Image: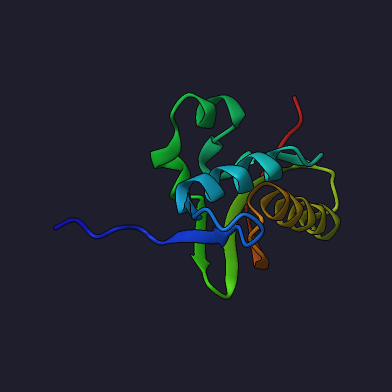
Length: 125
């Protein structure tokens, strides 16, 4: 019997018509896209960019974005490549804020932690 992956659950108390379950992979995609929107981020670790992820790079994304959804909230761990010349602390702070805001707005789940690992620096072309 296959083991089911953790999913976030959000209850709709106002209508009381059921539950919504959000797969961890969906939350990971939201986190990755949000991180890549921040100025100074060249992509995810391993050279993943929005085009690659959009075209089915989910398997490769699993190596750079890990999301754990529990009743206590969401913990996201991301490995990003930054553009040379940008402040690492400032850019990472913006990534954390963007990822937290995007996950909370799109899923309704509470985000507890967004951990960033800078895996590389890319030269701007």
